[in-house]
Amino acid sequence: MEMITANPKTSIAIFSIVVTLVSTLIQKWMTNQEHLKTLKTRQKEIQKELKKCKDGDLMKELNSELLKLTGVMFKSSLKPMFVTIIPFLLLFNWLRNVYSPLMGGAWIWYYIGYSVVASIIFRKIFKVV
Image 1 (tube, rainbow, N blue to C red):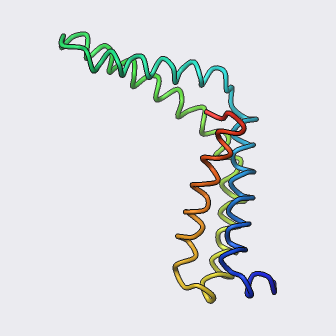
Image 2 (cartoon, rainbow, N blue to C red):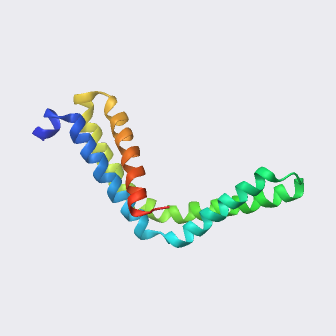
Image 3 (spheres, rainbow, N blue to C red):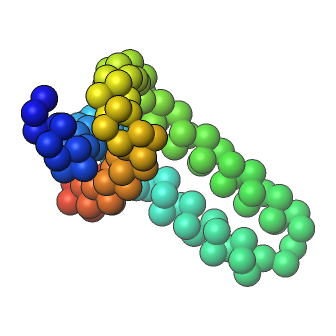
């Protein structure tokens, strides 16, 4: 607890990085990454086709397929979210109770900033879609 009060920004960075790492690994382990990569590739193909498309009927068809792909990708991300949401909510409540007296409401912005950067790095390292 002394490290937290002595260096709140450093400790929030550590918490953020660890939580982001755990979340990224759970997402990688609980989703079919190959299937998601295939879906993402198809999404990009459809988006390119939509940019070139002039035919209204074809645009509707492509948009419909894109919407279905987005739904499938969203569904696959729900399982890891359900596994992590309760522990993370408990952790955030604890973090709020610890950091609010030290940093006011600014702690959440530090957490989000560190988390976004860590997420980008971890997703590239672990090749998570």
